[in-house]
Amino acid sequence: MRVVYENDSNYMKELWQTNKKHWFQCHWNRFKVWCYDNKEWLIIVVPAVAVNGRKIIKSHNRAKEVKQVKDHRDLDIYDRSLGIYYRMNRKPTPAEYGEITRRKRNGEDYYTILSSMRLL
Image (tube, rainbow, N blue to C red; front, side, top):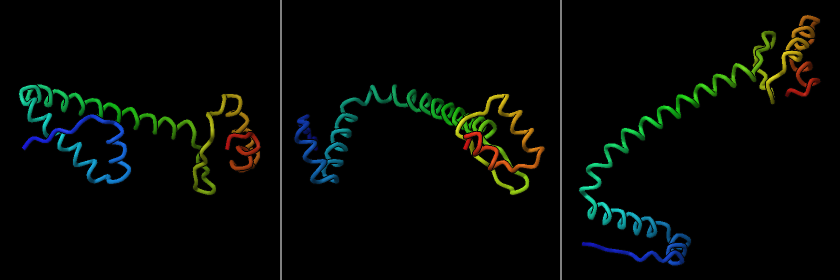
């Protein structure tokens, strides 16, 4: 049973708007027909795509995790007296870090310091 559908974009748009289930079934059938016609090509390409896709996804997840750790280190300040983290909008400059430590030694809390410096 081979069912081939035309590539009429207006027809596909109407299908999508009226009946999403039928739209997905049409595309699934087209995909099955294509796979049936290209078995030799799929046997060679699918394993290579799967292995390389896995490597790409793994490296992307690793980079995302490194970025999260770096953002946590650069943009968060922990207030020990309250036990909470403050998330800053941007990374402070070295001069601003010096002012934060100086004002913290004078007894101000992190919220007033960071909000007055417009870092929150």
